[in-house]
Amino acid sequence: MRLTTIIAFEVRKLIRARVVLFNLFLLPLLLIFILGNALSPMFNSGGDQTLEQVSVHLVKSTAEGGPDLGLEAFLSNPEIKETLRVDPAANRAEAEASLRSGKSDFAVVIPEDFEARVTRGETAEWEYILGKDQTKNHVAEMIFDAYLDEVNRMQASAIVLGPDAVTAAMKQVQQAENSGFVEMAPLSEHGASFSAFQYYAVSMLIMFLLYSGLMVNESLRSEINNRTLYRLGSMPIGGLSIFAGKIIGNGLVTSLQAAVIIFGTSWLYGVEWGNHPFYLAAICGLVILCSMMIAVIASLWCKSGATAGTLVQIIAVIMTFLSGGFQPIPVDLIQRLGDFTINHWAMQGLLRIMLGADPALIGHHILILGIFGGVLMLIGIITYRKVGYHE
Image 1 (cartoon, rainbow, N blue to C red):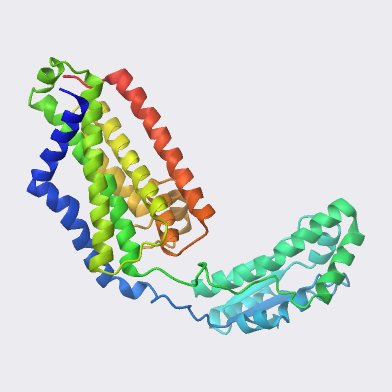
Image 2: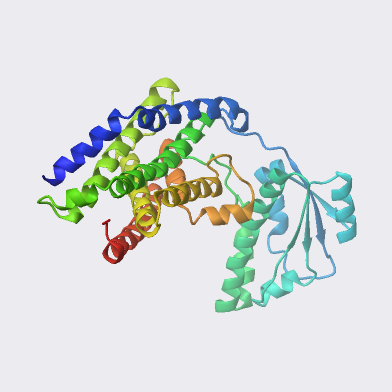
């Protein structure tokens, strides 16, 4: 008996099982169809979203006679004026009252000594008072942050070169044709956006690839539960070859599952998967590697197959939720937690492939997935050396 024999046996066993065929190939396509149709209103149709003008109340002391720091030139920029309508407010209380009454969408409080502190190279900050509309809050924050980034650059000049450097930098800013420090452009390279079908095709693809680890767990545990692992071990083949053959066989079937989901959604639902097939294959391969290793670690450490299977399912569901796989989540804390999941980096990488993003950015996501896969493989090897695969 050779390694290829075990691999071929695993593939034939999985392909012949009707339940496996339904769960691997039909169920993902069905879920993508349901979620893509039901949640399509949450996604735009691919065109640019029109942003409403944001009404901002600006609280700024006029008692100080320091440099202007280019704020007036910044606010008078045509693109900024089109996006923000800035009105002065006498004090913080007036700005808060305006927000509560709905007369304004956002408020900014500039400390009295802001300009002097910047000139001296000291720490200086603004206070943002958020309104009820989260989208308008984000727009205003990004625009004012762009101005503050330029101020921070001038502040660094003051620290290194002295206060005269700030005055020189401000003359350049005020003489510049465009002092908005903000560029209005589509998020993707070609101005495209992903649809609900694309989003859930990516999400379900990754989730089901992670679920494929259940097959590995079932296959490894079945030999022990059926008392057939001892018979396999008595044949002229090493235990490591038996172990590797089962993982590779399940991995090949999972690769076929990924191909069916990708080509099936493209043919049935018109999902565009981008123009980088090698990057697409690399991400899928790394997710499969992570899935296999998670299943191996769970199967070897858990005493029962049911416990290991439950653990694999819990891990897959939690990572899918934290990464926004079921629904995009705007909560900052959950988004930060999602950065530590396999799903997040795989989803963002695949979505960027769909949008035709810079290959270097896609490569960054592949690199992070590779780190996940390498760490899990190392843990899997150590686990096998300590626990082993035996009855």
